[in-house]
Length: 567
Image (cartoon, rainbow, N blue to C red; front, top):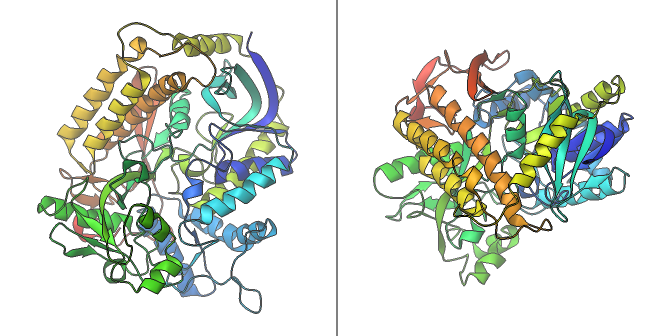
């Protein structure tokens, strides 16, 4: 019999969204349990945050600039504009003050006002460039551990539990440390598993981000939306491969107005933020469009052949404001004179589980989604913290009026049997890590430039790889720290999420933001300014279109060429 624990609100995910959801649910009077596949505050997306947007509304123009950036440049109009305004107010009035009480300090003026960067779109930093997430999540970890909230680390959620009506009533868990399988029953569940983008051969995600949240939501019948709107980095180190997420930051070195440059194979500059995209705090969409032209002209490749560096910046500025200069020395390089070869990497996505942005409810009763796993806003430490607050409070409110759920014995037994079925050795099947590498290769080869034929091929390859699941073999049948067992479960989640991503891309007949279809090279605001919603029903898929309102900032044009637009 599977051991069963009980709580009011179960939060799955230990990043900024999950941590704040757990804290806010607890403050609302709920019993809370936090489940983390990796380590609380030490894995996932949040630790990679470099800066935090400052939603300045001190003047009418400042407010318009911030809204324009969040809606147009950051979310390509695929966001709820009322949510953006609510989130901005939260960050101005709560977020920074709360973190300061935890020991994360911000620059302030003599009269106590927050002092942001001197940009048209101001930002805040908790530490040197690229390290704000580490500082903030360290404080969140301490706060959670000191709150008395039970935390289960290195424990993977494998399946959402549902009662006979389809309501989510908990989750099955595999403890990686000892192989124990147990269940946590809850009156409400919050998914906060992040962007889940360890799905391509080059990715900025950490190993545990194998799309478990998206896959579990799909299997429970929840809606997902806009999964194809996938962001890329282009200025990440090509070699060594283990340092692919060592980002050569395209924005100004924080504290200065100096920016890195990107050079094609001929040594010509093709992107410098100060010249091509001044004032933006996330110019990645513009960068990859410009790189695609260099690739098309034979002056760069997606996996190399172009370079980035700081050799045009005075040495004292680099060493004072670029934290990576020490790392360059370990590679035997001089940050003042050398340039590094770059390659593109998958970064984060705008789409995810479809939610009501005012409550973070999903389309399945009892289930909420907060942060990067949602389909309503791209992410960032402040915005996902706001999501966590809303989801935690809403889940606690719902739990207050719910009876204790009954144990779904049949579902528990079925999931236990599924998990144990992968714990096998022998046979001639592939190892799970081999299957994971093949899945990531399919999405990598699909790449940035998409068309109908490439999408069809990618989907066929993913469906063929599913046939390997019953044949997977492990090197050991031990239940303790069996990474092969975990890889087998990851592969299932990855296939589910990747199939949904490709199917969504097939349906969107336009190009937008970081999503480029060369057979539909126009931004089409008449037909595709929408949430493209998918839902899996058994072995079949259903889709629908949910138009997105633009009450405060509508796009100027109904249709425009993709490479001529700035968002």
